[in-house]
Length: 353
Image (cartoon, rainbow, N blue to C red):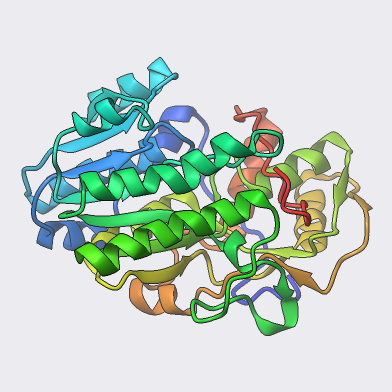
């Protein structure tokens, strides 16, 4: 694939054929995660664990702790509207607590934990519901920091805080200035500022995880593109390029960010090392699927991109390469595998979600 470092031609690989196999793959800890959690002291609370990434991250934390021979509680906290997710977590030995984190009494009653992965937030549906977006993304982090001021915190953020950057620059780096577009991105920057404030004033060790973008077989930018190609629908190329990383690798990096947490807060881009052209990803899926791709729009010279050089130096290359991910997704879509029905809206350039 032109312009994508590390790309190799598609090769037949063992497919993931069912949800159980997918969930197992997403939560399989890498040796680096086992080593990291083996050194970490104390329980781990995962706040906002009911979303797209939370359940597999919590299960990975449990599996890595067991593999490291460490006895600890993994506590998953969410409103948990999905009963199946709760059952899967409990079956893996993860404790679950149903809680609306904006309920201050409920938050205050949560167990203390020396390690916190913060995953709560609001993106989709934020346009038209801006007050709740700001409450979830900027007010709630302050409450959490008060509750867990003595904990280590790995807090999920987003590469959206950078704004659009020239593709030719290779993606925004952690030292680049922020330039959010739209209220969602501004509210996420507000989230970061709250964690940075408490890290500076209370000495709370924090890592801010600027994620762009995690992908599995039921959800993600590549899934959006693959499903459109398979259905014969046009793929919008206005956002000409994107970052991508297998969700299991994103989970692994996020858990290792607990060990990296510090005061003042550390900022880290978490994604894969590839800058993927939308046009070429669509062409690749078309070739694998035997479909003619259809495109609409025109590529802009800038995009929402994060430079992953620092993460690659810290964590090494992802365990799932770009070609393998494309192949797995293509096979899943061709088979009619389940999807979450939640498009990423990666093509949005106005910051409205």
